[in-house]
Length: 48
Image (cartoon, rainbow, N blue to C red; front, side, top):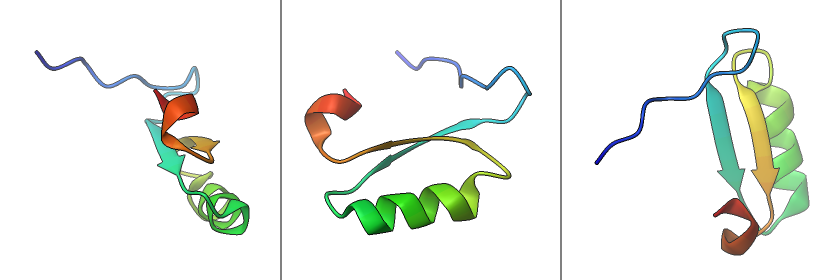
C-alpha cells in the first residue's frame, strides 16, 4: 500500500534526510530547503 505524498502548507513536497553526521544533515536541509519542506533526523529511530 502506498501513501500519498504529503506536502507542506506552502505546497512544497516534504523531504526526510537521515544522516548521523549533523553537518551533512544541516547542509542538505539548507541546500534543499527552498524547494522542499525538509525534516532532518540523525538516526533511523526518530525518522520512523
